[in-house]
Image 1: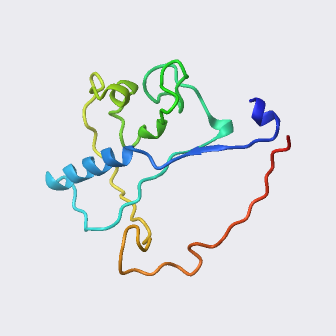
Image 2 (image 1 turned 30 degrees about the vertical axis):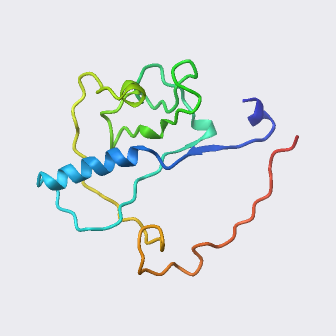
Length: 146
């Protein structure tokens, strides 16, 4: 709030460790014949939380729209990007911090839609071409005034 009062506007986003849980569930659905999927690069939806939408959690899961845990519950380096209620509802604070299963949780099926990731030469493909403006320079000006 203090920094927001000075004009700082921020957003929380990240490439979450949850991608491995998503990939594992997807692989298991394919191996157990619950899903057919052609080989492709898959996009994991990155969590995106604008500053005005931060809502502290009261319990150990993302429930009732919460998206952050109080500092007395998690280490300072903890990232909530491990949680995705739609793709990984089985995860809880206990499972993320201690590696223990969430009590009473079972592995839930993934949504039917799997989004294909765009080609990124040198990252997820070796013989593809990048769009001409893929690495276009974007300049920004600071908005925070001391």
